[in-house]
Image 1 (cartoon, rainbow over the protein chains, first blue to last red):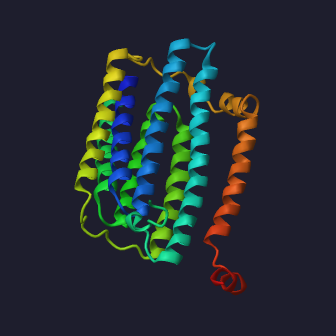
Image 2: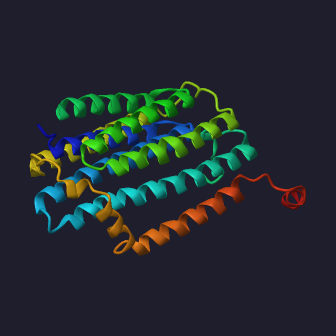
Image 3: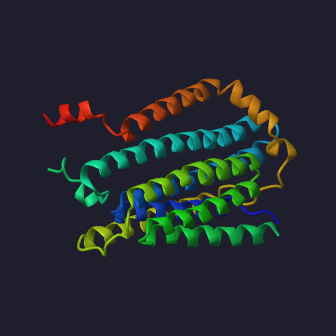
Length: 111
Length: 173
């Protein structure tokens, strides 16, 4: 028996919510970053699931829609890699100046 | 069979995601995120995207999370101290996220998106048409991603580099 596509979407919504909780409640910069990676991945899961829906719904003629779902995941992976590299470099720079990556103590620009 | 695999790895993904956001030691968070991403890779295979599963394991666990571990070791980030305040903010964040998940799940349940998927066709899983699509219709975004990665490499190098002595004296002036 095949898995209903909506199950993938519900799992993805759960993971996304867990990611938002992590990003909003943690104070360690690295853990916040990890939560954001989790959110990106949950969205990837729903894109893959939607790609499968498109493939099954439209048959052979509109497989292009399904391929685009997969290709967006491919691009998200590349952008996530770039984001992780730049973000971690930022944390290294901040740590060098302030000796901490606790986001509550990075308050130079707070009102 | 497929259902059993889905359930096992879905539960594994959710449990390890909880560990990611709940553990105070960031090294444990990274390691359990590895478990989450591997389970998601299994689900990608189930949904008919073996290429994306391979990329997920290679790019995410092989490159990005190793980078995270490197930086954690480099910065010597310790355990997060027990939270002193902001309890209200924390609970508002949790309530908001739970509401968000509930709203999205409700939306999916009420709109009946593809109740049952038919078995995968070989053409959908196949790699060649995907590559053809990537290098014809999506060629421009592909090139832009290349530029973006180049920019990220330059930016990361500039940001993480230790400033040379002359620059440092200029900054302090």
